[in-house]
Length: 516
Image (tube, rainbow, N blue to C red; front, top):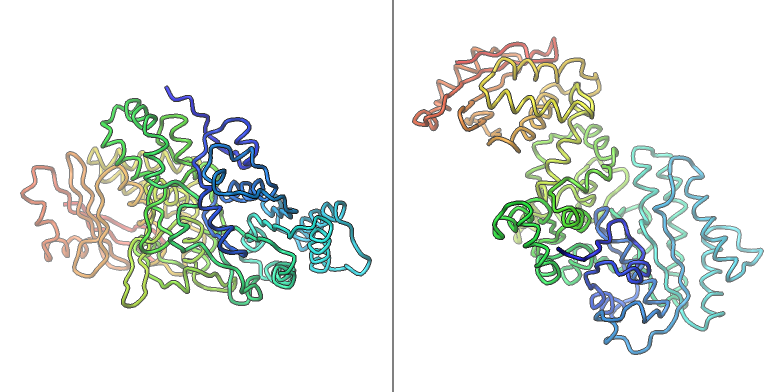
């Protein structure tokens, strides 16, 4: 059995190396980045290794050569000069009040001032920051390395609160602007975060940052590539496959299906989510590990606020300008969803510069759709998994009436704010339910005109369904027969159900269904 100790939740490079945790060597890329530029930004989803990257850079700029023994950079770096480090971690704060950000910034500045001193004239955050950078450089004789982890946490937590957004933006703009004005005292600076706020936001004055987020050269500086997986964990992959009772080839396919599939530019290799991957290897079990660490509710609030049609999410199209920057006042939730890691690049039209987006893998798709259910349907987080289990059992046993009565319960007592656009609300709930059922039975959800709304296939049954709003179940069933929607399945040996369904605006629910 493997003797590797997986660094799950370990974000400090020094403790990782001293305690002999498993580490996939990223130091050649880090060395290249340091030697070929000075100001960088990297956006990656949460739990993708951004904090460990920042911590590795900190150890490097502290000149701690002993921590890099046996890694690529040990042979590449000849000097190992110690630089002053200003490491700002915004991940630790809770940003829900006007002074939430001020407290965190002040705490960091006070600690730095205890080391490098202060001047009475430095009365603002930006003046204090600039003074610290200058004195750190003068006192050490070396330029400063500035490392900012989760730069966007205040802005993300304030989404939907314009007062807080404005306050935080007005604080952070001049603060980060110091990176430009103090250029002569800075050796290296890197900001990481989940998202990139652009236009009138915190980056508008900071145009000297190189954004590595969609740069193919650094695509695997966070996360794990297929090659890294094969090079570092091949023995463990065979053990994992044996534990699952799978052939090695089928196991590799399943691993990719669950955790691979992140593409951060149009022509890049796929990247695995490292948090989920290492959790799976530690337990030799497939699971939705990324989602168990919490999904931000602001994503659902954005989708609901902008009355987003969830069917679009699996086949969304946009351009690089939209993908690569978030305007805090934007009405488009897609850049936030993409940069948060719930959508990824699936294709690219080179002629028009259009990206096609979709879910990266099964863990994200199933986890996100499960997460959405309690926000759209009449169920809670505890009951939701059991409801889906019962749905699937009813579909597998051919119990149409029980299935539709359960579906009716999902539409009951729906909050008014969700059903101002009734048709969209029906479509969104049906999308969520049938997506979840589709992980266990074959589901095809067609929406283009002239095609059946839904086909469900199990081992013994085939269901062909048509939905109407303010029509009649008879009319829906008649359409199935008139347009021969069931014809492709009539030669199949399984039992066939044709089902017409009608929704009522008055009851805001399924009014009737007919089964043939």
